[in-house]
Length: 383
Image 1 (cartoon, rainbow, N blue to C red):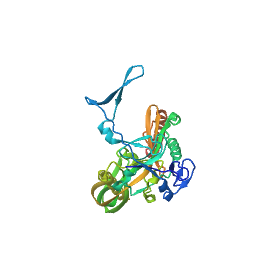
Image 2 (image 1 turned 60 degrees about the vertical axis):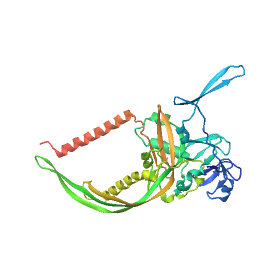
Image 3 (image 1 turned 180 degrees about the vertical axis):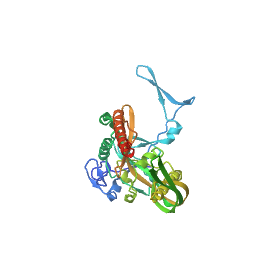
Image 4 (image 1 turned 90 degrees about the vertical axis):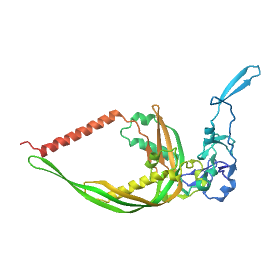
């Protein structure tokens, strides 16, 4: 295994991928390089990672070591140290930065990061070897400032959000991550039976009537699906990732580690076979909804019976850009995610200003009551 970093051929500074220019740009001298520039490969640095395993004495299951220190005056000091368990050592690795020698700690899925000491951007090539290599990647199109401004606009669109939340809620952390996705493509064959209704309301001098007629509706056929995404990381919420879709997969490009410079990346820790049930559910729901939307001329349409079969499925592995913004307010943490290609943003459940909510409810209630009152005058005139 080795670490890979990207150094500027001009000054030796660290290179980062620029979302606007879609090039690698030196953080120091500003030199720009195309992703496939041959001079980059001549200046890439590789080094061996140092994975530390601490020896320890265990007593009663405790993984602690007591170190005895004697100072120059003969005083004895004891320091108790606690080490990682064997399970933790299997999950975490400690790498040595090629630039400054500082320790970079990450879990077993870490694929790209930066040194916490010198901010050198590094990639772990072994995380992309063999079947771990993505078929393609969508590069980041939007930068950190765009993500910050999008969050402010997101706040403004929430009418029930307390003003104090907008004023005092500050971003604690913002990070751009390439999220691993499995993409499923194939054909779905379906035979569906729906129930449609036509409703007629009328009245006479004594009663009001509701007449409902029911109809059997059949729909069937084949639908082609391409690149239905399911994130391959157990650490990331599936619903959060689905909420910032869609991605424009036709803008994806062939994978190269240069796109990762300056960003974080994880490889998948869930196999394609473990995620396919999520893809099947999404494909099935989309198939049913598409055929249902093809039915018109009825007041209501509901699914009665379905026969569904998914044909041969092709699977691709890809990385897609996501900005994660973590904020804190009033002792609670909030997470927001933004599509790094399109800018679509979504967030956790946010607080509600109960005063604003009550006022809006009363306004709606009064308006509805007024409409009912006026309608009653015309529908049921006084005799």
